[in-house]
Length: 139
Image 1 (spheres, rainbow, N blue to C red):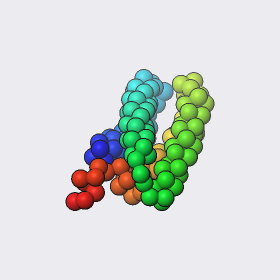
Image 2 (cartoon, rainbow, N blue to C red):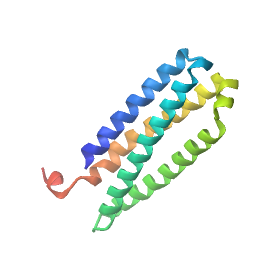
Image 3 (cartoon, rainbow, N blue to C red):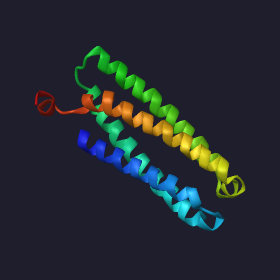
Image 4 (cartoon, one colour):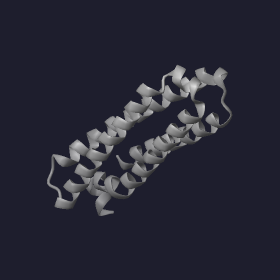
């Protein structure tokens, strides 16, 4: 289970790096590529969130230490906040708005990416170890 989430994180990081690189030299004519990249990232992000949420729900059904419950609650709050920021970003940055303010869009994307990088690091250090199966924990 943890391996799947780590693979998701690696894929998201790669997509974010590629997107940031593509934005460095992009022009208005590159909007179809930018839109394609946005959609691809959004799909992987939603799929990852669904997988992670399902794993958390499964683990929370069993007995767990009090500190695990706190980590799950912290994670839930952080994901909701991140998702709301991401949704606001998508709503605001329409293709027309992106074309009108490319530097602002790029700055907004990089800020969101930095937040997601931080969140994934936190998850890998705090959340993912709690999602390991009993056999993996004993190893």
